[in-house]
Length: 479
Image 1: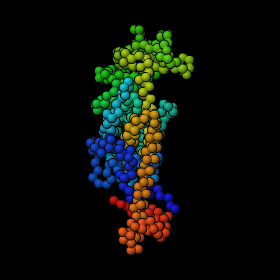
Image 2: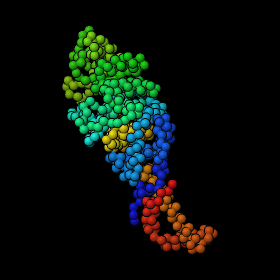
Image 3: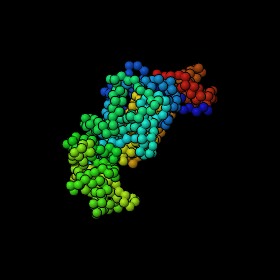
Image 4: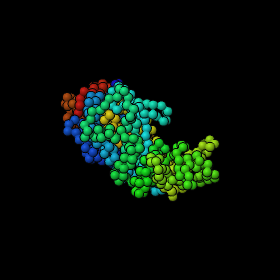
């Protein structure tokens, strides 16, 4: 017998293939209303929600590329519509993403004893090929080498339990590849504005992201980032703009020669560390710590003015080698060393988020050489990730893989249920025709139903009937 697969049912509308969970999430986050507010309109062709559903199906199929996913779901004929959707420069993708994030934050506030934080981090997005728009060279500090592509700067929100993407910038570098193509976008388009912002430094991009989060009335108590974002510009931004709003910074510090003002003298990190002799034990753990309050020096000016006071916390973990330690900096001087460490460990959530996006959400599926589809596709998978994280809030111990796996299983069960319903409808039509052709009226049909059914199955092959239904599913298109 021929095997009926879910994507053979081309006559079923995509809106009918959505599972209970997906339907519930789309309604919960009011995606239709959010799309309208973000200027997503379509005069003809597929509805915007149907276009997004294409990407959910592609995600569940674990396709390496968008085009491959369309082939998997037997929708390759919609390739032009999908490309037009991704290349539309009038769509405000940032507003769409932030609007969904705001809803998520309202629905999932921080639990008692936990706090909200905004995390800034970046990751590499390698991309190769000739004539790729704004293709640049970047240095990957993790792999200690250069790569071609883009750099993604993420702004993520954490409620102490789950970390979701809030904003991002696909950064283009100054070291442009020789064969890179320049995009041709209208100056007033959202894509052109995004590209203009992508040319800024990571420092300026991160500060703009924090300002946008505050503008959208997203409340958070701390900003967390690693040592790469520490400089005089960001520190002045924190002291002049964030601290007056009640927002503090907790960050990792590099063991560099950078000077701090301590005991009326300028010392670097190692010198400060040696001046503090005694270690303290962190609670009942084996972690040792010592802390001191120092003053930040503005290196951007020749007179080396003082920016503000910060707390330096030194930590020695059990598995670390001798004379090795980690240093955290906090602008909130009232925090204990234990509290500073506890707050900074929340930054690990953004690492998990980026890993999930790359491993399960199709981070590299967009193979287009244009810049606009890169923004569109990354926004879509970030929105899906937020929707799936909403399910994770019910059970934080569940991984993103388990959530996607459950949705996929539910989706398959729903599709097979549609197949059997369709087969039953087609078989029932044939059965009624069989009874009518044999001169059996309704009364006789009900009275002798079992005998008539047996004769019906003897008159036609059940296996051939299923094959016939399968062929009809491929050829016919039911509105």
